Image (spheres, rainbow, N blue to C red):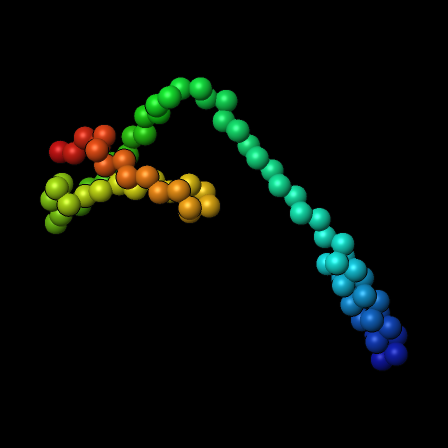
Length: 77
């Protein structure tokens, strides 16, 4: 019984090693069909102990590499 288990483990180890070595890199890009130059994003954040002068909003892309400060176009009240 233990010899059979060792053979199965060896086969599984070799099969997983071969599958790891043959892996392919897949890249997928999804483009948005929206051609508008501006988008409207509505959000509501309520902070009771923070004045509006100290609030800023930053936008990051999916990878976290492109940061944009969009605070100048936000209506605060």
